[in-house]
Image 1 (spheres, rainbow, N blue to C red):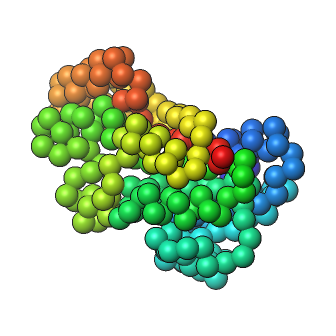
Image 2: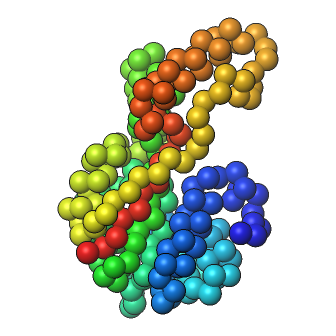
Length: 223
């Protein structure tokens, strides 16, 4: 994929979504339409269009005229349906995830897929934050106030959410990398604490693969 934006180079969610879309298109060459819901400024548009697909973007707060306004708490206000929905880092913001994902699912053709990502509450660093600070990392009071993280998307809950709203064949994917002792930053006055902290993270990740990565991805097919 040619990357026009530096942010795409840095964010594994976007690369995962585009690679997953490419794979789905190879297996289903007849697909035509992609809805990017919660798209922000539609950073994925160029990559999707280069695959020969129609791209439509939606956001609660559209930053420009190319993005249509849609609050997923409401029914879809436009015509048309999608073969693929990209839904990155959205469900954790929803006051009623079952309602929002139901409305999203209604815009998808039967047999289509949703490519979803969300912050990972099982992340090793988040677990240590819970022990040391009394609040799960990425779901603190600060994240509530600043990012409106109101729904904690444990994988088993997200599976239930997707299956309840008309999806099947749910698969989960690690986004991000394993912890390494020498991750940047390493040297400095905090070196001893970093070694201890990262060693504990590595132990957690070795016991539970879901602890790897600050985010995770999910792919599910509409019944």
